Every structure is written in C-alpha cells, then in structure tokens.
Image (tube, rainbow, N blue to C red):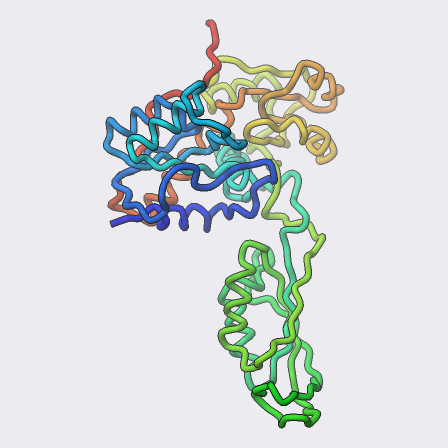
Length: 365
C-alpha cells in the first residue's frame, strides 16, 4: 500500500518546497495526504482532460509541474477551467499535487533535463540563489563532542559541493551557574562550573534545518543547549534559476536551431539573428526572460527559454541569440523527472506519463 504522503515525501526530498518562489503554490492542492494511492498520472498541467484520463486509467493521483491553483479561490462553481478541474477531481476522489519552481530551482530539476536533451556538458546554475544556506554553531562538552558532531552531519549538515562531513571545530572553556530550578548535566546548583567544550560549526541548506536541530537535541547532554543558527548571504551553486553549459561541438546558429527543433519536437521557434558561432548555451525552462542579462554577462552565445515579449527581443542587442521555443515545449520533459523519482522508490506502483497534450497554444502549419 502506497499512501499519498509517501509519494509526496520522495518528491519533496528531491525538490524541497522551501526552494519555491514566494509567488508559487507548489504542494498538495487537492486530496488527503493519508489517502491510499492506486496509480498516478504525471503531466505538465492538471487540467480537466487529465482528470478524465486519471478516471479512465483508475488512477487517483495527478502529479503536475504547474499548480492549477495559484491564488485563492473565492468560490468553486465551475465558471472556468480551474474550478471545473477542481470539482471533477474532488467528485472522483483524485488528489492533485504540484512541484513547480522548487523543481525549477534545484540543480537536477527542470533545467538539467533541458540541458540533457541538448547534450550540454559542464553545466552550472546560471543565477545561484542567496539565503538558502545556514550555519549552525553549537557548544558541546568534550565528552559528547564527537557523537553530537557526527549526528548533525548524518542529518544533512556539512555538505559543501563535492565534499561531505565538513565542520570547523574549536576547543575552549565554557562557564555556567545553575539556579535552584535547573537540572544540570554537570556542576552543582549555585556554583560556577568550568567545562571543556568544543564549538562545532557546520553549513547546511535551509530545508534540512529541522532535522539537524532535532539530531543535535537528541544526543546533546545539556538541559539548555547554547547554539546559534546564522542565515548566510553566500550564493548556493546548486540552487537557483537557469543553467549554463557547453555544446559538445561549436556550431553555426542555423545548426543550433536545427538541434533545438529536433530535441524539442517544436513546430515554431522564435529567435533573434546572430552571426556568432554557438558553444556556450544558457537556458531556463518556462518564462526565463528575466535571466537575459545574466546569460549575456556569463558569455552565452545562445539563450534558450520561453515567453519573451516583442520588445524584450531587442535586449539581445546582438550579444546573444535569444531562442524562444514556447513554454510547454521547454518543460515538456519535466514529467520524466517525476517518473524516475516514483519508479525508483515504488517499483511496483502504477505510474503513467499523460497521453494528453495540455499545450493551449496551437500552430498553423
């Protein structure tokens, strides 16, 4: 038996909701996390036709990239596609879950999938986030120093790039005086006590904060633990918007456009002209025009994304070739990420990529 909360846990370990943008609405939109799930449909957009597909295939979970509800609903009467979808899902006891900008912002998320389709190498986050990192500083008596340090490392602290178990440790003398209401681990009531202690410092991503603090509390002997959590301004090279990488071989602009057309099976590409050969490619799934200055600053010869407005194309300023392939087209392979997560963790669970093309934009050929 697979419960909805089990599936959600695995998705959110992969793409923690804390990394979604503040305007977003990722998470469980319809359903009870305790409900038993018999099968799942994976899609880009959880629209009514996808709910129909779930009913037909006897699936009671729809996993989408785009949240069908972005802002609060004041009524649910079926007056638009959002309300019709929600009504049909509830009537048929079908849960809807979405992972949106949190899946965009993790290193192995939507943008890495695009990079893989283009066969880019040496790719990195185009615009790394700030304030995703925390530092824990905790004072531990010498007797428990190693066991507490290892516990917080095991809980997810101390990972820096390709290195794990990273910590900085300094030794000193701590002092305290217990009052009559205290139950001190060492020392006597009303007497100043001197204790050999270590100060342990570790860095972690903010999604792991609760687990790390709990791990520290579980094994620390003090009744009152002296610790600080600091929010860091450091950029995080593994969390952020877009990616930038290199093609295996430099190519001409028209060759790159052919590569993109074939990789994303698109009938329409909007682009700006360029005379530069293309080697370095910046990209962003969905609406990525806000990253154009960053792509130029990082030396990309092409920037692949979607939803550029007319006047924004002028901002290329002959410095980079803008390649707009459409919102749906840029994110169409996102479902493969969900499929891999679920298939790996629940190998006997029925999960299907939708057969519905949810792209609302059609092209006249």
